[in-house]
Amino acid sequence: MPMSEVLLVAGAFLASAVEMVETVTIILAVGITRGWRSALIGAVVALVVLLVTVAALGPSLVEYVPLDVLRVVVGLLLLIFGLQWLRKAILRASGLKELHDEERLFGEHVSELKAEPAVDTHAAIDWTGFVVSFKGVLLEGLEVVFIVLTFGANSGRFDLAVAGALAACVLIGLVALVVHRPLSRVPENAIKFGVGMMLMAFGTFWLGEGVGVEWALSDLTIVLLMVLYGGAAAGLVAFLRPRAGVTQPAAEASVS
Amino acid sequence: MKWLVAFGAFWYDFIVGDSIVLAIGGVATLVLGYLAVRTMGEAAPQVIMPAVVLVTLLASLPLWARR
Image (cartoon, rainbow over all chains, first blue to last red; front, side):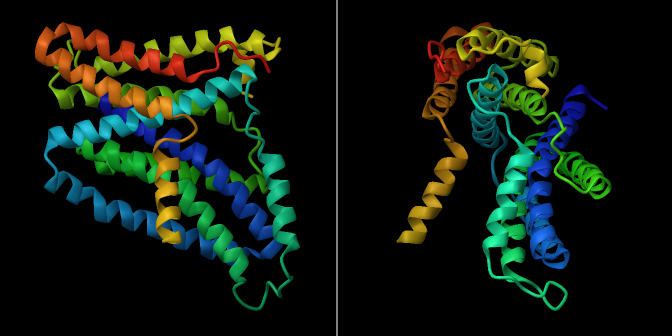
């Protein structure tokens, strides 16, 4: 398998894993407070909507949009998206922004849902639970759909992008099923750091190809760009940490 | 109308996010890359484009801020 395809699967897998961790927190909160039936039906319906979106938009993107236009648009969006992810990860790793706390978010969701009028969770679908679960999966999943569509459209391998994303869904779903609590120990910020780097590297690469650049190192350029962006980001974390008054090593925070 | 505003706000948040600098930097990478390909040949854009991306990232961070 060519290196760009390995990176493509890894990118889709990791991006999907991060979003799944956040989604699982919402589903768990809904399941515990409003009943598992509504939580799971809402999640499954949202997942079907997301899969249909990929199936409907994916092939038509490749068929009707010229490749260079696709590369420019997709490259630009991926680059901006990657910059957003990496910027947020740098701010969190350096202590300038709070780390994502799944336990705290879980507590907030549970309190909000408990405040809603009680229902007989065994009788029928609880619409509050259904809507919260559906919305949570749909909104978190949209970012993954965007990544799968862009990766798939540019490489022509939707199967690989979808497989990477689905593998993460299954893996995180199974872990959540076993653990049965928010996945607060998943190194979310470190994964976001990696995905941000990858999206930026793919974005720059495809944007360049779209405007006519023939990268001297071909696919290897993507790896080189990842190293460049990753190194710069690590340097920025080290630079920013003293300003945030944080003393522990950067690597520790980026994976906590 | 309300729905349209909400729809626009959703996409603005989705694409632009927390920092508009990133969106501007992305477009600058595209424009400068295009100009470099047309006027400077093959090698220059391969350096210019990643450099603009790095400058964008730098510019989006509060480098001199204190918590």
